[in-house]
Amino acid sequence: MKTAEELLKENGITPETVHHNYAYVYRVVCDLIGEAIKIGYEEAIRWRDPKEELPDCDTQVMIKGGILKPEIGLDFENIHCTGYYCDGVWDVSPTDYSSIEIENPMGWRPIE
Image (cartoon, rainbow, N blue to C red):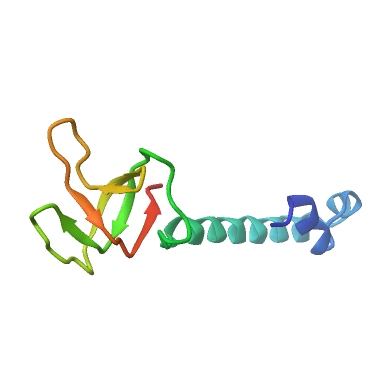
């Protein structure tokens, strides 16, 4: 990812430009901010493949698909729920009293 200075230089903005062409600089900077917001948003809503990338332990995440267990054995391909991942276990309700684990989730993403 490029730094702010690199993006400004790429768009012809230098310290000298700032003093001579304020309207152009303002427009370019606003466009760059909008682009950065879009990139951040797309990264935040991107589903991660649990085979390639795992969340930090005990961080609440959105979980997509999988099989509820134990005893339930219910497939839910198109259902999303919040849960936690830690030490190889995906858990929908990690409390001291109960636990509903998920096997083979299709994806996960952070809750922003």
